[in-house]
Every structure is written in C-alpha cells, then in structure tokens.
Length: 83
Length: 429
Ligand SMILES: Cc1cc2nc3c(=O)[nH]c(=O)nc-3n(C[C@H](O)[C@H](O)[C@H](O)COP(=O)(O)OP(=O)(O)OC[C@H]3O[C@@H](n4cnc5c(N)ncnc54)[C@H](O)[C@@H]3O)c2cc1C
Ligand code: FES
Image (cartoon, rainbow over all chains, first blue to last red; front, side):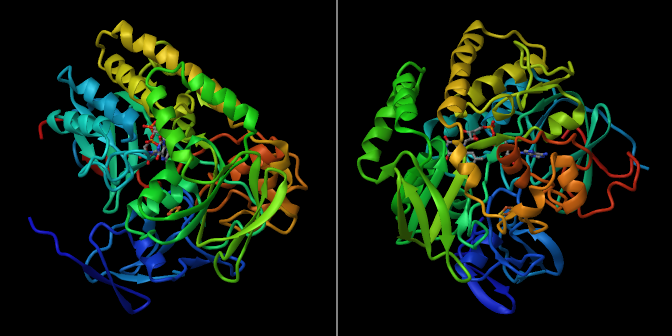
C-alpha cells in the first residue's frame, strides 16, 4: 500500500497541505489558527494533546465538537474552527 | 435485537505499556483477550506513535509480542459507562459498542496536572506532554523556542525529545528544590535499570539550561504566547518563546475504577499482591495504582494479565514490582508542589477552562461539590479533569463521586438499553 506524500484539507475554507499522520489539531496550529473561542470569547488552542481537555474541539466535515487532537487529517477534510 | 455472543475472558482498558503487557501476558494462556484504547493506535503516552517505527528496543519488543499474540485490538474506543457488571460501553467514531468481559484489567494511565497562572489559557501555552504529543502528531518544532516548566521527570523527557526534533529549549524551570532533586538523583542509583538513564540524563543536562526552585508566574501575549515571566531560583526573569510547555507532574486516571466501585486510597486505586482491586474480577496496573513510570507499568501489567487469566505469578516479577514501587513514593516526595504555587493564579484568572469560571468565584465555596453547583466549575465537557486536580491542590478539595458517563458521548447512547449496540466479542475472528 502506498501512502501519498501530502494530503490537502481545508481550514475555514482555506486549503492546507500536510504530511500523512498529521492530526487536525496539529494542522490548525501549522496554519497559525486557533481552535475555538471560549464562552467568554478567549481564543484557545490545544492544551493536553491526549483527548482530555476538549480545548481543541472544532467541526470536522460538519460534525461539531470533535476532539481534533485525536483525529488524523484525510484528503478533502473540511475543518471549521470555533464550531 | 443482536444476540449476545461469547464475552472476552480478559478485557484490558488502556493501550499504554501497562495495558499492552497485561494483554500479551493474558493471551499467552490462550484465552480471548481484548485491548481497547481511545487513541488512534496503541502505545499510550510514552510509546505514542511508536507502533510503526519504534525508537526504543523495549517498545519494539512489546509491539512485536502484541502483533504475534491473538489479542483483539479495539482502537479509538473510549469506555464511558458500565450498564451492568461484566459489560462496558465504549464510544467509537462510528458507534457505541458493547463489550462483555469475565475479567477486566484497568490500565488507564495518567494525565498532566495543570495549575492556573496569569496567561495560562493563551494559545501555545500547553502541557509538557501535551506539546510533545502535538509534535509527535505532525506539529513542526524545528527552530522554535520553547520554555519547559512545572515539575516532574516528564519535563526532562519532553525537553530532550523536543531538542532532538530541533527545538531550542530556552529553559527548563523545575519547581522542586535543589535539595529534593539531589536526593532523588542519589536514590535513582539504587533503582533497577535507572542508573543508565540517570547517566544519560546527566550528559543531556549539560547541554540545556535547567533551573530548580523555578516556576512560571505569567505568560504574556496578545492573541497567542509571546513571552513567559518566571521566578528563576528567586529572581524574576522574562523569556521570549514560541511555546510554553508546562505541567505539574501527573494525575492518575482513576475515573473508570471509581465508576466500577473499586476502592481508592490517597487518590490511587488499591490493589493486592496480584494487582486485583477491591472488586475481585477487576485488576489494575500502571499509573492508576501509583505514578511510577514505564518500568513499573510494564511489570504491573504482566502481573495483572497473568492473574486475570489465572496463571502462575513468577516470584521475580513480584520482587521487581515491590522494589520499583518505592520509586512511587520517591517521585511523590521529590515533586510535591510547593505552597508558593497556590498564589500564582490571580482572582480574575480562569480556573475552569470549559466554563470560564474565574478563581475569585470558585474561592467563595468550601467544597468542590458546592463550587460545581454554584459556578458550573467542572461541569463542562472535560468533566473537571483539568480544574479538578487544580482545585484539589489549591483548596485541598476532595474530588466528587464519579457518575456516568465518565466521558461525554456524541450519541444518545444513554437513552438506549443494553443489547442495542454493536457487540464486540472475544469469539472467533
Ligand atoms: C502526556 C504524557 C506524556 C508522557 N510522556 C512520557 C515520556 O515521554 N517519557 C516517559 O518516561 N514517561 C512519559 N509519561 C509518563 C507515562 O505516564 C508513563 O511512563 C507510562 O506511559 C505509563 O504507562 P501506562 O500504561 O500506565 O499509562 P499510559 O501510557 O498513560 O496509557 C493509558 C492509556 O489508556 C487510555 N485510556 C484511559 N482511559 C480510557 C478509557 N476510558 N477508554 C479507553 N482508553 C482509555 C489512554 O488514552 C492511554 O492511551 C507521560 C505521561 C503523560 C500524561
Ligand atoms: S488538546 Fe486536549 S482534548 Fe485535544
């Protein structure tokens, strides 16, 4: 089985190319974006990296509140921050 | 309605070193064994991402044993409830699965402890293990500047990993006193297998700036981190950096054990000689029985796996465990949090990151339960896993009893009754 060299996802509509094996949380950090706005409007990014804190939650292909540090990027994936 | 098939003879929850060792050991008897983990693959914290390209001989060995065993792997599955004894529910990306077992091994590991201080919620202020996990999952770190701070041996392991990946480590700030650290180092020399590690670490420490008696006081930045101000051995110092990797030692993941009704003592799951908990068919191994590192996790895992499958326990394993168990106490003593850390957080600083509850609000209450009820502290999706251990240290509050589901689930799993989910069994594959 051959792995593609790069994958392309979109973050808030903007394409980003990443290496296979990259999680969505890492991709969003590579893009220099934040994951979500907190209930008082603070910008937040990943904290624990292990699925515990929920700070990295975003929408993936329309599914809201996904813990993106536990999800690998797939070609064509649509990620929305703050969702 | 799907029929219920053969249960697993031994089901292991948690695919870190302890869980892998337990599953492999139990499978050597020829019984049906399941190994379940909520991550993308097995490996747990220390062996994250090593399944396919192991960098340590030890992890290569165990992954090899796992591959050649007939353990059924169930990845990306997170146990959240026990609808009845002998059955667990796990959430997976696709559905909720029902798992039946005769014997259970809990190997749920640990997480980092976080403490509030000004700026700790800024993006790029992360856990030490947290930043390491992100780098292992694709975040480029070469050429980035990092301050590592907090307490515990994890700080050194993470700093070394990041440096090997090309990061510039500006400082490792360890809150423990110099005296405690010297005592710790002296004791390491008496631990089986730790001498080589200690020497290697000594060599490494000459290459980076390491400061005991030091801790972060504030992180600054507009929308994301720009610099950190620390108390470095008594003097304030501000250091510009891209990332602050900060964690205050580890907290055992005991929620599932509590949910099942296992007895806890001083925050750890109580186990007997055979790693059995107060519930006879439930065993526990690794960090939940005491934060003791990977060697102990592997030995406890083997004992638990052998005991859960009713095999003989080699005296050597029991002896090694008892020796390494002393390391748990040594770690707890060395990296005990100093009282100064209680006053890092200012009244306006958020303690509960899910619900944005500031310290000033929480401080008015006398118990975790009262604070939860009145402020929503700990009521968000992390269910208090971040703010609970913080308030435990800050206010000496005891954690509340654990109620299901122990993780929020996306599905209406709770409204349905057992027997209506896909059943994963230990039967013929
Ligand atoms: C973030 C982090 C990074 C670390 N990095 C290092 C390091 O680099 N070097 C080092 O020496 N030590 C490290 N440690 C210490 C480490 O905890 C131990 O050395 C060792 O990994 C312990 O093994 P374990 O099997 O007990 O637990 P873990 O390795 O923590 O494994 C437990 C597993 O159980 C899973 N789990 C927990 N609850 C559930 C549930 N309800 N359902 C399904 N799965 C569940 C977890 O996701 C995890 O994969 C780290 C600890 C943490 C918290
Ligand atoms: S970073 Fe904590 S859950 Fe993803």
